[in-house]
Image 1 (cartoon, rainbow, N blue to C red):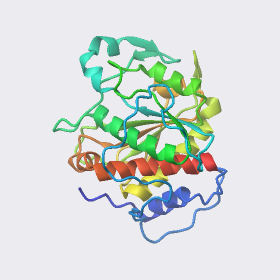
Image 2 (image 1 turned 90 degrees about the horizontal axis):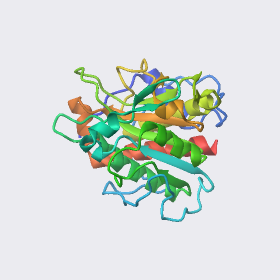
Image 3 (image 1 turned 30 degrees about the horizontal axis):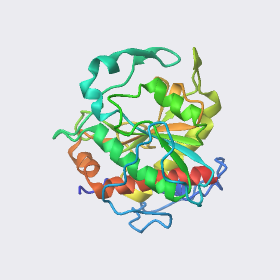
Image 4 (image 1 turned 120 degrees about the vertical axis):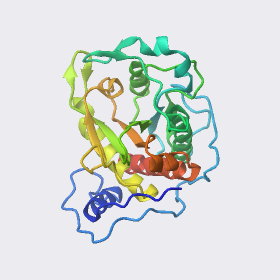
Length: 297
């Protein structure tokens, strides 16, 4: 596995401080403590259900609850929707995924095929794997988990339907799993996309902006802690956070939601991480930890 990028000390300290919940969980916080050394990745087993990096269990759950009864745990009574970006079958249904759908403020394509590494590891394959890992971890912590798709439909769902699944579930949190496809050499790292305050047409994200930001901040901090990977060096100004107003999956959401771009599939070093099962398990743990911290706040 390629070596992880090293975080600037100040940023590492801030993200780790956020990840450990130093603000008491109310999102207001106080002045972050100064830190003289970068945060190191955590290789310790999770006290709340870390699995081996082997293939996670696969259960059909497109827009429906998992077949496994939620256990007791810190997330008992909470509903989380996990949205694996794209669909492996999209590439065989280009006409269907290219049709325009209403995303509130404008119209855009139903979906895309997603990106891939230079040697052909598809984003859609990556997102399903990480989504399964994340689902299993959240269920072990007591959450009811729904997937928007499980590779069990010919294509899609479209971005408007993805949002609708989270809304109809009245989800406490929705996380859409992705990987980026920036082509510039040296572009590395993860970033979390947050909804902008959008109000127009059928979109009104204003009620979810603050909660979505808190969710995204906690996921970003825990990804640093669990994977040791740095936030993106090309989006977000080193914060690992990016605010967008053009994504239908965010614009149409009425529940707290973020997108997690786990790395750049077109960068050789990031691609090596994304293809590594052990790193994918750490990424799922980081997301699960961030979700847990947010929902227990």
